[in-house]
Image (cartoon, rainbow, N blue to C red; front, side, top):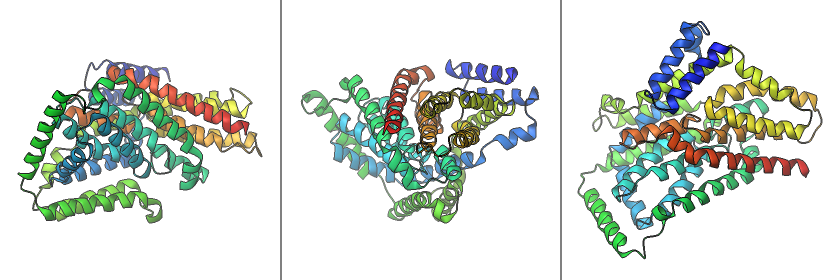
Length: 432
């Protein structure tokens, strides 16, 4: 157990201070887990969540092919026309769209779709897109917590606890809406100089109008294939519909994504060669996730996560305090380890708590506490959630660096504040 903890902490320190690329650190940590015989090579392979890996890969291929059709360039032009280049409008619209899409799609899929558009649009206007991307990361995780399909932990919780799509929305919308406001208001106030409307600044207004005309002119001089665009949009919409209906279709999200990517690659093979799309896949991101899954599996095999779960179980005999401990325990744990194995470990613990408090009308609050903690806590660090890692790597690919510590300057106070708001929500629900 001590060896597993030391390997994980060492890897985390190297990632925080960016000594090496995080994918190499994760891969090295995973190898050490195997070489020190904490887990066997077979257990290491089994620990990798290939469903997540395949989902990410398929969506990267789908978006890359669709991007070559020019549909995202068209969307940029339309968004520029809608917002008239107003930084505040762009910031709010993109952030809210991210939250809504993350609730009804999947937060990683949403990030893969939204972040490239954001970078192209904001950079095209001569501004730094970093603050926009941070807001999108935060709201992707908060929005994903609202529904059964928004974030993988909710899918696991829903299936084990027999909770429906509507149950999540009806019970979680107060803290989710409060969380969105807690994120947006401080970010706007802290970055007001970058986001304030430009209609009273003649110099900035003039420059922005020139940039808008330049982007529009450049777009209208691109030779676009109408058929390519229609195929791309139709495939993306069908894939999104598949995500929303995956429980009805009895198909997991990664199969839906693979179907979408394969269909689009086949019907657009005259326009884009598959090997060109594969070259653009963020393979380092996928390697990072594989390594992280193995390291977390090492913690799980040695009983670290189970020990943490048992500490929560035996900490108090008050159900409300147990819900708060689960919320904060899941929130803090999800900042540094993948939330899927932690949620998996916590589910039998919650069933034990329910057996202990049979008949209490507030027992379902334990599931909402686990969901909120696991999903929202992921905002705390750059490796806390899949969406964070993917967004940072898309930014890096576009020569935009989001550092671990730079991210935490925003993420940690905002995440702790949102978790505090969730605590108020839990206390209020127990009092009525």
